Length: 246
Ligand SMILES: *Cc1c(COP(=O)(O)O)cnc(C)c1O
Image (cartoon, rainbow, N blue to C red; front, top):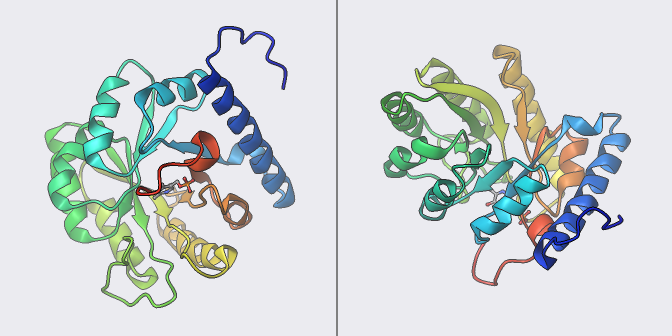
C-alpha cells in the first residue's frame, strides 16, 4: 500500500489502515476459497477497551459497523461519536437491567439468548420508539444442555428457535439472524458448522433473518468457510488489548 494521499495521517491511523488492509486481504482470500464474493462479509470493528478516537479513524477508513461488549463503555463512546453515521452492535453478555441503556444507542444486539431478555429489549425499544435488530446467540460448547445459558452467553442450539420466535413476535424488535463465539477448545470450523445448521433452520422459518455473526480475529477464515456474513474483529484491526480484558 502506498501512503500517497494520506500525508498528515497519524501513526495510529497508519497502523489501523495497514491492519485493515491485511484483514480485507484475509477476508478476500477466505471468500475466494469458499466461492463467495468478498462483499458478502461485513467487518464489525470491536472497539472495546479502545478509545473513541480509534472509532473515528475506522470511520474515516470506511468501517462504519462498530461493536462493543460492555454497556458502561459503549454508552459514552456511542455518545461521543454521535456525529458519525455508525451502526452500533452490542456483542457482549447482557443483563436485563441494562436493556434500557442499550436500547438507546445500539442498532443491533448480537447476544439475545433468552426470552426474558427479548421482553426487556422489546419494552425498552418501544419506549425509545426505535426498532432493534436482534440476533439469537447460540452456545456452541459441546457440553451445552437445553435450558441452560452458556458460560459466555448463548442459548443451547435446541432452544435457539424458541428465542428466534420470541424476537420475531416482539413489537419493537426485528429478527436479524444468529451469532456465536467459537468454543475455546476444538476446531472452530466444526463449531461454526453447527451454527450454520441453526442459521439455516431459522432462515427457513424467517427468510429475512440472514445474518450469521461468527468469526473473530483468530478464526475468521473458518467462520467465512461456514457461511458467516459478519465477522467481529478487535485485535486484528486494533492490536492487542491489555492482559486483563477481553
Ligand atoms: C472481543 C470480542 C470480539 C473480538 O475479538 P478479537 O479476538 O479481538 O477479534 C468478538 N466478539 C465478541 C463477542 C467479543 O467480546
